[in-house]
Length: 244
Image 1 (cartoon, rainbow, N blue to C red):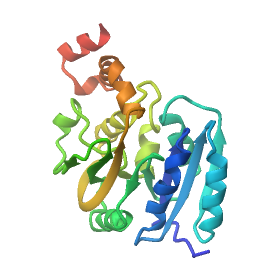
Image 2: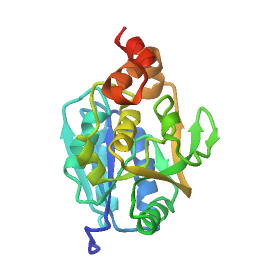
Image 3: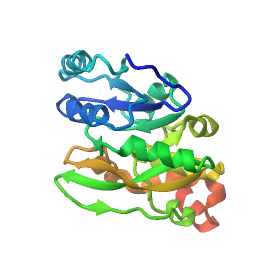
Image 4: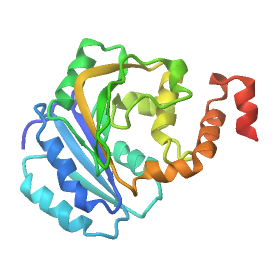
């Protein structure tokens, strides 16, 4: 096994609930990285499909890669397995990559390079390419905090310093489906800075049973919870709406 420089290691956290059919494609995109100083932590969130069969095969095929499997009872939301995986992570940098998604082969290299060139930042965010049922490409450009508090303008699979996660107390569990949006707001509220990684691409799978589609049904409640989680960032009218 390759020697690991813990100071620069990226820990890739892969929550998985009944996505065994996508897991190999996800892991393959990590193994194909041009940057090799990483570990993979797959958190099985109580899957009832053939998760273990696929996970065991992936560990066997990728013997030179540090892959850790963590099993837990189903939590019903991504925040809990993400927090679980990060709590076991050795890396200085964290990437949460859902089991049905994938990343470009230069992803980790470009993100680590950005952190090295800009030590003042805590979040490196990519551009996004949808695939599956839709193929929209999004260039996120420069981050505007005033926009972020009303619209999530950071991809789920942005890399962040583990220190930022510690500083804000991890992913909150009271806004399922919008936990990543809440996390980015928490980071910026705690003075952590973010910067775009122009050449890195996050491939986001669009399909009917994704959590995002389910969350849209309770969109207003989730947005109200975000406001209540960060009352100092919103005006009194939005806070009154959220309380109602």
